[in-house]
Length: 387
Image (cartoon, rainbow, N blue to C red; front, side, top):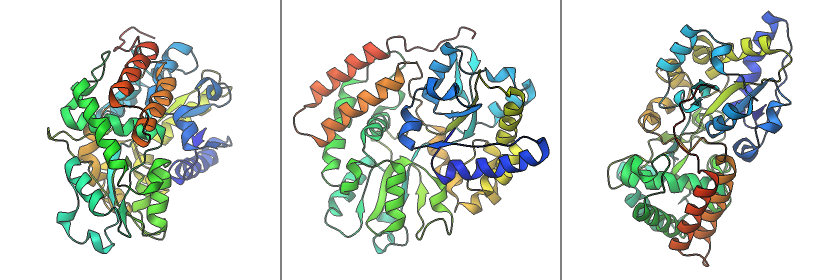
């Protein structure tokens, strides 16, 4: 089970077809919308599929549920060591929990910036922001312009934007493991997003990164996006009518780059009826040879650093990997305890209501955020027990 975008489907199908020809087993990939990828319970997937693509916050559920086979049971030590040494930022480590590795980093991503460099307003390099303060200035200046600033701020991505702006302000102390969010920085982050929402493209209110990227490449309405999960496909010539150039996320006043880690892990279901074949396919998909070859050539966004370092791979995506590498190396990893799936959904709705509404103040919003933290993330800590 993948998610429904060419970045996911195309490389999986291309590599699987070649694998099938040599292994002798047919492979079928189903796909679900991005919202389901972010929220759908693991229990609904691992009972129906041999291989599941997961977001790293699901590893807490994976470690406790028995639904997923620990990776070290289906890869050897040398393979696992190569994956760890060639992690893009914290991608590999994000799938490790309770002493076990629960997925391999098939795909690496984080929130980055995006710009239509072909539009007249982007011709001056000085115009493009490097800090969140400059983002606000640009959004206000372009509020009534033909090409505007946009920012994915549907509930899930409002939550991620809140974390990113907060981390940019004060670094990892914004939300330390097992603690509450930093009160002053969190208040400022909420208010910043609310103020920014008044000036960005109206699509922002309901959009995820795919919707923004499609609008950005399908029309000339969006000049710049300060923060969205990067899809390197949109930097490929010919993928859409127009191309996007990607760069690092904005910095806060502290100099920190704020960005939430995304990407995709590939996990083996404990209920697979063909575990040996499924494991072999997964190892093939994540191998450096495939990641730097057919996977990226077919539209994938690899999780192996060999591909991010490859001049040939960067040429395919207009240097997307090189241009955003600094951001992903410093990306923030969300909580991974089982309660986070529900927490992200509710916290996202809470922050979305504050950013776009008028009936909740920042103090009340944060009080409810803290209550959700205590209720759903009460056991949030770095677990070290063996699986």
